[in-house]
Length: 185
Image (cartoon, rainbow, N blue to C red; front, top):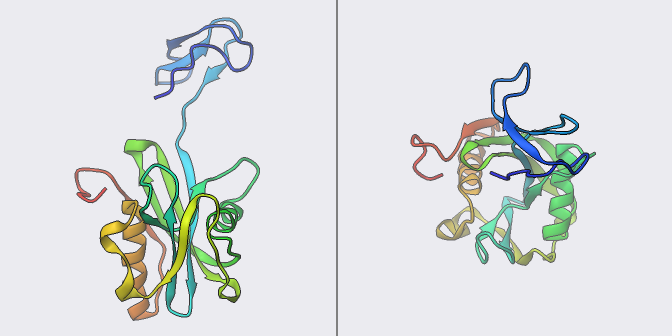
């Protein structure tokens, strides 16, 4: 939790209190009354596919340096989730994608994140490694480095995809990760 000791609007001190009409303790400016909300971060990314292969990036940054992930990252202001997924894929894998559908959405309350992944096609099979990636690579199902995946959301998405591919039906998956009910998160 981030403590906002000073107001981002006017610079005066904040205090903890329950604002009128609210039910949670928040940081509130003692001078201008600005309420400092702490809300979940949205991560958006892509399950980028090319000829029955999945694009994965090996992380060149923390957390989880050196492990494999789907291209994804924090959504920016003034962009849609689809734009964010395409931007992250471009930044991390130097690849352009065509988004097909919303595929997986994960609530991760223990770290205050919402993870949104789109099923997409890699344009022309072209990719590389951006600054946040050591390398990028296309994997067939039997090549997936299951023990070297960076995040539970990546593993869940890949398992959904390979199972759905058998039936050629790709429903949207919504799950909560990181609870006592989910021992992998």
